[in-house]
Image (cartoon, rainbow, N blue to C red):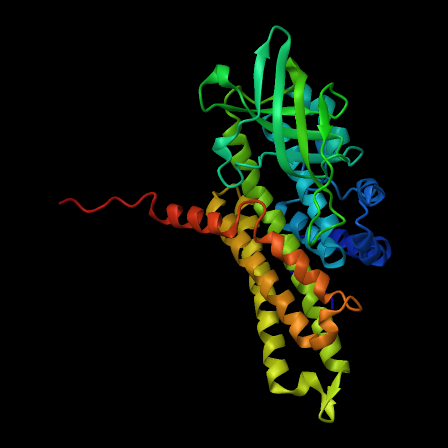
Length: 387
């Protein structure tokens, strides 16, 4: 069912209408088959780029859509309601563009950003490593300074679009800048020694390729450094705040699909002489699902509006990620329950939605990490009483 949205401008209303039209025509019909066949839909991202949907939150002066995050995230949600893997890809691409947009030089922004935010190129974000998932400061992959740039060595893990992306925003330890220093680099796959491992075999989001990236003495030109040397962790954490909002929107879109599926089934399926939606046990379950979806949507919009207003929003982003992804897991699980035995088969997408929801509690910082961020923010400015 269409979501009743409170959008800030008529332009935003037109944009959401365009998104729904494209998503219904080009995403929804392909999602189930491509997920089943584990096929990466590169052509879909090209289509979204041509429609101007791959760079919505970036400035018009660099080829972006100039849209507030409040609007961009609702576009992501609409995409996710049809195909979560594609919506996640848009969110990751936005995350990958962020370092150059926010911290790049004037030359980098002028020469690189138009093709990036215009969707001609697809991005990936390389922060995690196999031994350093939640602890990003424990990175081992490194870049050492040379006379004409850098040499990168190591492996990055869990890279969305790994092996398919055209550029990789990559965070590497730079020991010459201090023992714990990390810097950000703009890497491209044609560099010698750059390669992708075979894709991970995942339980869900199988249309979204995830692979490790191997750096075997990769020569990195000096102009590929993004931001100041040794300040990469600040860039990474700033990017993750906005990335968590992207994941929140994806989770809400997925949950909305599960709710719509469950309601449609409950209205048509009869038991004891009437539709199961009229039985209190099912009706209450649907009501709780609807409450979870709308609460999660409201939570990510609160954080997005703070970001748009230039206010701090890190805690609100973590709250949105926590609430939205937990809601997606519960709503998709309950959708399987409403469908009963049918929900456990692949005749309906409920089981796929449930598998896709699980990872959203894990990536962009596990929900346990979100609780740590929230808890620390609550006490950061509290001065203990004297004595």
